[in-house]
Length: 259
Image 1 (tube, rainbow, N blue to C red):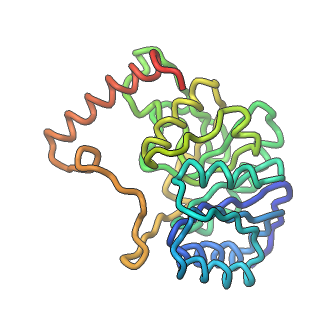
Image 2: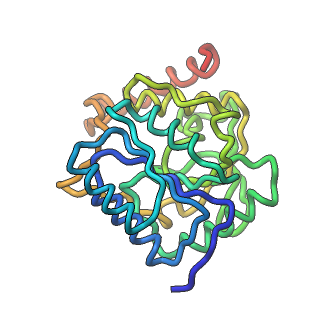
């Protein structure tokens, strides 16, 4: 496999109690010929058995391990990981994702775009659904378009930022603020979504948003993010109520709350 050196890029991986998934991710990057200027793994106070495995993996893959003596939540894990990065750009990937073969070329594209356009903040590679308002760019990417006006209908337009795999400038926390700490993971994501939007970001989005990464969780290492019934229920009536609730809440929070 041809090796590609991504100069100026740090691979930042957040980790909590899924050391086998972490090893899988690092292995795929290595076997795929990805060479990063630096690799940072930010661990959120994993259990002893996972901490021991982290030490073994570190010897093999030569990353910088940023730890904490106890679990402090997603916000703290993201903050301390990003603050450890010293390169201009950060490729952020959670440990349960796996890059697919086309990703190498698209990461090269994204790196070029960020070097070419100084006002571009990030390039997104994965999402659970298609962002609703996109302006065609090039090489399979589109520019994300956000507007608070009501004719840009729907609450999904607010998902401009997510913590799915993306390449961003390493001054991210300086421009958009730190992740809130001491709250649940989904609340952290929600808060950051609005904090980013209110700073008027510019971002690109890969059109085939499921074509560059797989998210894979095993029974032995399941997702550590817990969702409540209201967010996950598949009942059609509950789903319709959830969509209406989110539309009202997201619009209210964007226009009337400070983040």
